[in-house]
Length: 202
Image (tube, rainbow, N blue to C red; front, side, top):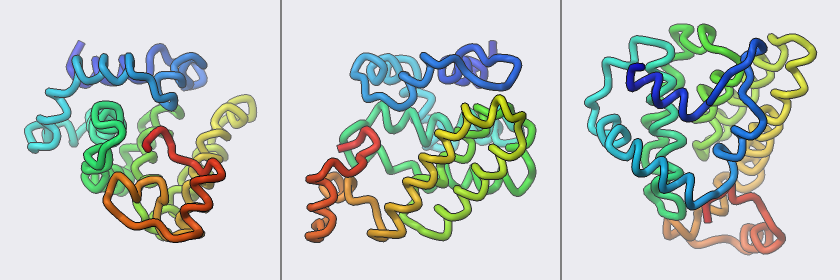
């Protein structure tokens, strides 16, 4: 198994005939878990550093290689550096890989659940233009699959909409303010005090 496939196998697990991962795999993705963070740190921190330093650019020519880079830079960085500003430090690089890949059609060569993570870097910028584009891609993805699969992908679209709505409301993600040394507005403080989304980072 190549290193690309080792990364993707760890992250996605077994993918079924509909192109979806098992339900329990989502716990690894979206629940803050110290054990998972440490496992990713032990197994993939060196790969993340190689990606940051530009040592894995040869992967970009392949749809699955580019996806592995996006997972490293956009997801594993959040596990490895959870709760610090460094968690977001590779977002621009992940976004660039995502947008370039879309331009050359790499995303269309992937299975539905893989595409949900291919598009995820567009949820992270504090840019309404990118957020709107993100929602559009998830809408297109949901519309492209069979009805039985649509419901299972709806949560990805819902997450994209929730990210977009926060940027539309505040112009930035309030939960990042403390980590990035930014002062919160009164509206942002109220939002956070009432349980506003932190997406596993606070």
